[in-house]
Image 1 (tube, rainbow, N blue to C red):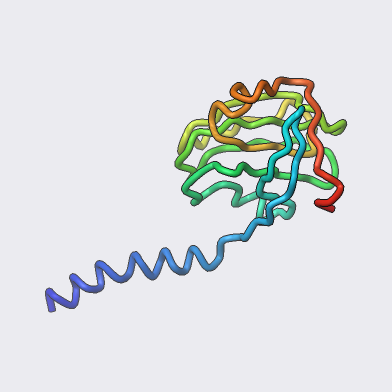
Image 2: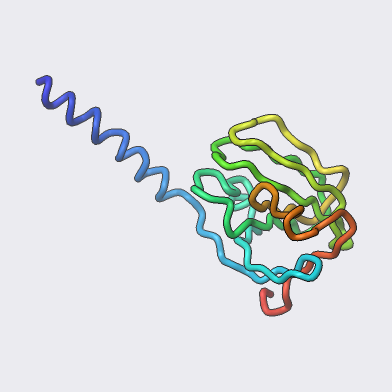
Length: 145
């Protein structure tokens, strides 16, 4: 009986993880131009994908663009997210309106400064390292549509 309990204690968590991973969204990679840089990022363009974001991923690479079809006020938090992030809130004119940093597992909502059309999540320090600042333009490449 003890052996059976021991086996169950090892297997049940694995089954729970498998069940969770089956329900995780899959993200397409899309080209994005931010300032002078062209990068590929994961695209979160549905409510389900935006809700999941980078949760459960092991790295913030290659980044994620959360996109809305029309300007909306949004807030991000770090539930189930183990890595620190830089976030650029992107206004209706597709320019960066705010840069914020989010810490792992911090569930404090960080709101956008007003209605935005997107948020770009990148590894902590990425914007500074690439000289990205408020006011720079962001655009999805036409090939992404």
